[in-house]
Length: 322
Image 1 (cartoon, helix red, strand yellow):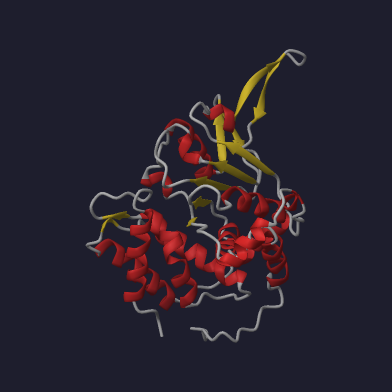
Image 2 (image 1 turned 180 degrees about the vertical axis):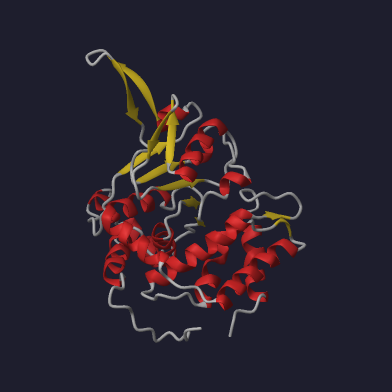
């Protein structure tokens, strides 16, 4: 297995310059959250969807908007409410009187990046319509199939502390998100910068990539190699979640695939063409914690802190490859 030393020589085609520019662009409006920004970059390079979960006012929506602008891809925002219908997201077939035929009118989901703001405030029927599209990359309206633009990513936000008037996502739908991130409160210095920040700063985030460039990064991540020893490490972590007495639901095979995908993307983001144990270790909690259930009936939403703590403890007990 390649040496996991920090002294890594990037590949000639390493994406570091473009990714450094992306980090800087998002960091202009999201202060003191380098780790969160890194996790979002890993998610999009891995081709996955992201659930941004935290209390109101910490910058969840701003983070999603800043990333979309920096990526330079088409972007739509949907505010989820209790009266939102599936057709409000997916689109609808309407009759064109001039052409004397039915035409499909695309919904806001037809964009490279879709911000599903407060996803837990809409009904399960509407949630399911969105999540089916996330899984298949297409929608079916009136028997007709419509392909979504590629790349396609959903950045969903929700407040895990407020339950009145909400519809928590079931575990099977939480599993559709590659990564769940939490913003957390900023430190004092970062919050001082937020105090002086104006609404116009978000509009000044420049696009440093485009859809074609993002697809190239995603293709590069797929070429990253995973040593069998790393695969054994991932399998050991997954097995530990299934055997833990602190969890009533362990990680599914889809979760195993997700962790490997994310680790490959993390290696690509770091400019490597191979995965090291630390890639897996750093991503185990954000990739896996929302896919398990804590003992005692706490779900992935209600027991977010509990499942994250259990996963963090398991990561420390499973030895990485030498």
